Image 1 (spheres, rainbow, N blue to C red):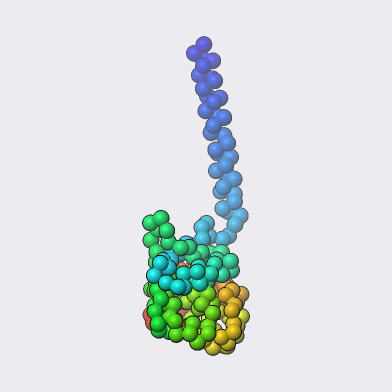
Image 2: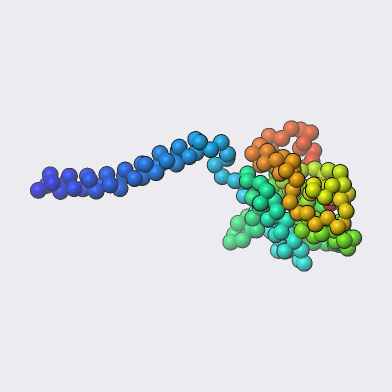
Length: 191
Ligand SMILES: [Zn+2]
């Protein structure tokens, strides 16, 4: 009796353990097959101080989230610590970066009063947060062209070149960037 009971317990234990082991193997196989990072970096932003621009800020973040995979911009909630603070004032829109995925964004009303599209301004400033410099080439299909693009431009999606650079930045991280690129983070970037 004792032997039979022990055998039943062993079988029951195996029934539990075997699927778990198979799942672990499956997980390892998946991790090995995919060369992408195990998890996208999540950058939390706090837009509670962005006043009338809160929806525009969320729209700018969503545009990046749709274009890149290695980093995602998520509104801070439920105690999540935000590394990006988004504020509003009457100046020119600008970003004070503090490393990759961190800093302070000002949604300045001066550019909005000039007719620039607030969600595009937000996407541009998030571009700085994600390590992109200004690129005043006047093109609407580039976010980082900023105020060099026409005020009629309402594009919020990054150019594929910009998205690719952010993918690389997110993978490399701030410390892995070259000294020349680190200069980007030391100053203030205007729209
Ligand atoms: Zn800028």
